[in-house]
Image (tube, rainbow, N blue to C red):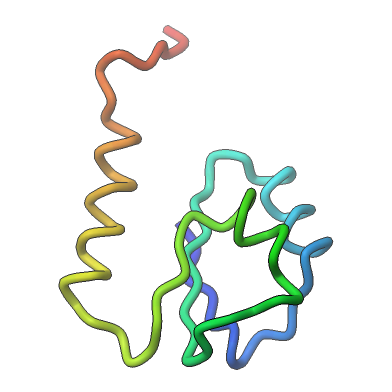
Length: 81
């Protein structure tokens, strides 16, 4: 999992898409004090797992972390043995 602060990291749709293609098993969570990121519309729709508003509410962060770990622990998902 990667936590990326969109207020400090200058990144665009293309860069995020490249990262998610290169690291398909990594979840990308973003933090931001802005509600809207029109320049990241594609990334937010398809590549970023969630964008959390700053200041971070610990309950919201734990919700998303739990969601990620539950997805990874899905017993119906096939695994290579």
